[in-house]
View (cartoon, rainbow, N blue to C red):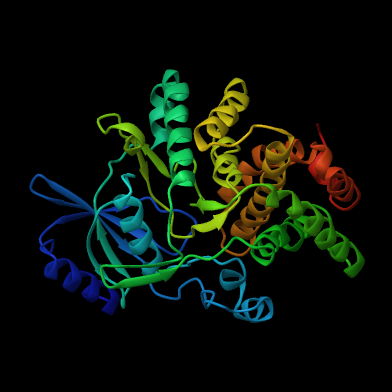
Length: 363
């Protein structure tokens, strides 16, 4: 029996000239979105199926912290959820500036369908499994793309293809909503539930840490820039040789955020000999100094991001019955420990040793 959603999907594809295309489900991510690869003769495309509000309410422009918290995690963390407005607007704006976001071929904003260019089947993660000798070349290209995105100007309010979107700031409440996934999910799973005093100290220490992020001008951060979300497109020139997907949660943030996302990858080990030269390359290309202030900010965003990921992976196991994510926790925990070794995070490191000793066991 055909569901109403399937009928909407077929109607959308037919209206855009892809009704007769062969369909193949593409392996998805941890979101509620799904993807279908379309083949019609020698043409290829991808359909994003993003049921509106499937991940909760998004953050209204101008909402204060209390209102965001009341709406739930998606709004608190300023995530786009499954709202197609964000993907369409950001894809078009990135494309206009010469970056290889997928070209939008059609969109049904109301029902949550986006038809887009197919960037291929081999993401950087797969490329490197096939040929690890390309790691330096590909990561240098990715760094150059990140630096170019940082140097580019983006408006807060965007509109394209019938979609409209406001790009917010990655502020302290958003960062804290994410960091709190560690205390809400990781801590009770591996250690213990935490009392009010411990949670208050956790929040206070992060408030102090976030001050390190004010030393540099913010830029557009895609917020999920890593080897499984980028493509190497060597036939394209300059910074267009890195294909971009999964950028709908973009916010204006400290320039180290996407750099951390790339180099402290939860799913693959980046050659440690490349990390420092790549950070230095990013700073040089972005017009920043690779100094103590930048390294402190990098450590803060690294710690914040990895605390979030540890919590998310436990949540995916416990709430969503996806135990495979637990296998990734040792790598993320190692990144988190490394970030906490920075002097700027000494008190936060001590907090984790006191309240979540599992993070430090067996090392």
